[in-house]
Figure (cartoon, rainbow, N blue to C red):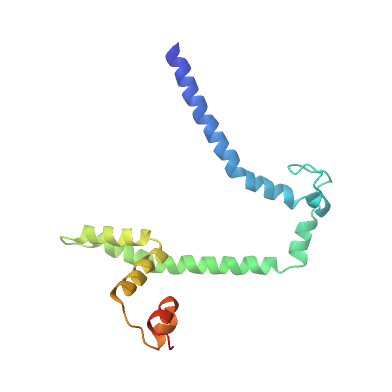
Length: 161
């Protein structure tokens, strides 16, 4: 009997946690749906219940979006750009992935894993150590293209630029 109660408590707490996180994740979508159909006066009145309608639902915001803005064009532009980015990425990544998968040799697996792990590192993180290295070795930056691009070091190493 005790084991049955323990199992029920464990499963009940697991499902309660799942329900909590599902509600937490779904709430922004619910809020977006509710506010899309509310009137402006219903949105701004603090005495109204925020989670439901006080005034009748309206399509006023959708009319404004589609009739008085270029939303359809913006949506089409985003779709075209998204499709082009996916196509270019697939055209470049598929042959590279196939080549890495078919790579033979003693260190081929280690090279493939190294390249894969490099892609997992955020690109901004890769540039932080470079600035530290330049500062540590005391690189003298003269007036020119690089002194313009490395602004924090410009005043320190090349104050006359």
